[in-house]
Length: 471
Image (cartoon, rainbow, N blue to C red; front, side, top):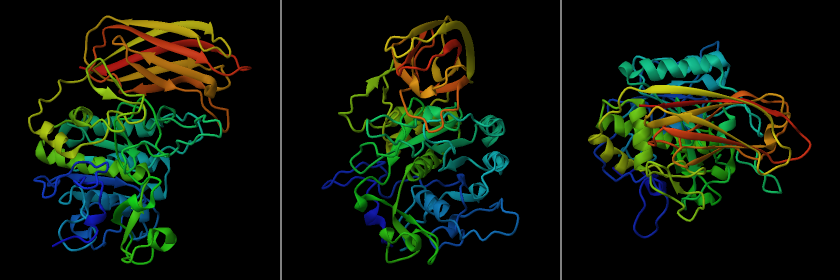
């Protein structure tokens, strides 16, 4: 039976007459996400929805003090439909993993740190993937540390979830890519502790042409992108909506669709993240032995180079194309599954940590500031890099441009000249991250370049620490 919204799902597979950015998910694909359980940490799911109910598992949990009606949950319901809407039932569209199991944790109804930390490891004995289509409550160019309770949950989930193979934590990269009238940006994924760490997989968004959406944040920790709604209204994301008159179709008449149980105009990196979650469900069905680290590397190696004329593309030292706007490119479902089928699991992970005291005043308003070098003598394959930067007395983090260069010559822009709303936060042993050096060798000189790009604010580059994670 044909699903009526399937013709609106341009982002699943490009047709021959009108090519759009797509996740390259063939029709009648062998893998459907069977046996894979996905927790959706959001504002809840309409668990009785006609196109979702067959795939809703046991263990849905509410963080509200009283019994909660899960039907009051527009955002989570739309996220869920992208992943797991039923296929071929004559209703709505099809999910990317239409045979997967979804569980709702409505922590974002009461987004206290303890609730989020709990939701990330709730059901740890059965959850394979955790979808998080939300971001830090920072915004506007201010750095916000990863809360210790949340970091502990991510660590537990990746180390002990899935019988030690690790829960795969998919996160929206963020919708804060605003710029002012002079073209100066505000946000970057590296100012958010949720998506600049080694545990989470940050997902960016492209429009129907494959170009970066105006809202999608840039940065050195982006893994891959997926399609979402851009400037052209007709190319939104068709998915489930809260049943009846309680969802987006009732709140926003611009998204009106004749069947109130669905919307055709969902968007944001909130929509891009569940697309990748759906693809990961296909990978885990195809190869149940994959660790979360294997999944991350497969997604990077199988991604397609999109927006090929963008000037930021470069090949890193391992031969992978990477871009501060797109990570390793556009997620490719078929190629990722093909790679997963014959994948040799990564060896156990290990880390090295090296520190350098600097103690130099950063030259004010200079394009050529301070270059500090750390030499790594141990040879290992890089998966992720943490950079702890300490300049606690500099009053304007938005003035600082901070760039890491690996021994292979690959640059990671960790902080760029940007605007701040409050201007009260500091880079006090701030942890930046980068995945751009994936597959490179750690051996050799790592250089950190620090420039102050605006006048009148002076501070001291005290020290920095390099942590390389890999095998």
